[in-house]
Figure 1: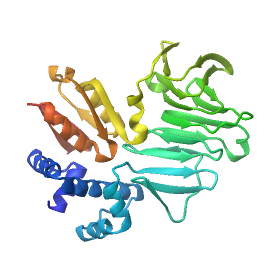
Figure 2: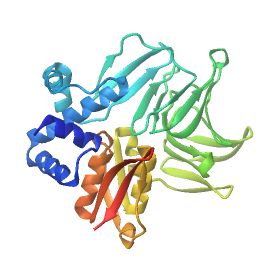
Figure 3: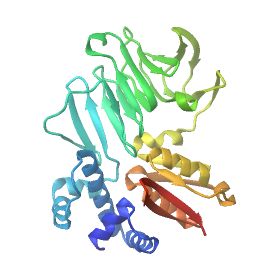
Figure 4: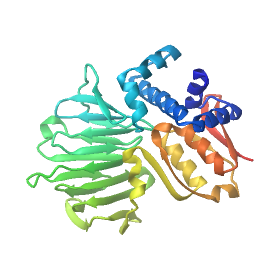
Length: 320
């Protein structure tokens, strides 16, 4: 496969005919699939480092070194792990980590880029995964006597036990207090979306310092019309932490909207009965938006095009 065409496929700059050619080539053999995965991961790494795309020769050289070989062995997503305690940043790639030179000072707030997740190790030993576009705010150094953070967006928390210092997550007008547990939080105040799901341990939902609800494992609670409603959680919904987007019985309209939000790109589509067709499937986030759309076209009769026109950038969907 021509490397320029493969690179253009990853960035979404190919015609539908050429995209189909690349997809057929990827699915033709495991060797081709591994070649695509390696190229895709190289692209993700360069996005993090804001470096120009490698030449064909550079790409081949990178694939020959030990990191390139690990890429071929492990299919995972790129993430960044941040350690507040040691003020260092590590790049996790395909399950391996390498330290970036000249680590920056950890900021008071950090945001996960569109289409990526951040994995952070807090100074108390707790781990936080931030979903695409989400922001975590930490206290100023002089205010870190309490274990408190603020979340805007979606985050998965694995809190280190400390009976003397409860962990507090401020999410919109509500707060979540824990001692040590695993839970997911979604908080988009401007969209009226608030939810937390508990996987282990126990958490208390608080408002203005008062406990208003205690949640048990295997359940989620959502804020709907100023009421807290509990229901069993669907674990597949939270696979984003592991680099997977999972859709179960979702309509194309819902999927397009979620992909638009996740990858921070507008997706325009005509109103059609085709949008009500449901779909179930899982996608590795590291494969990128355009690969996901290509897979969806297998079972759904539509084409898409990347539009750059009059200072507008969007993806246009057309049904056949």
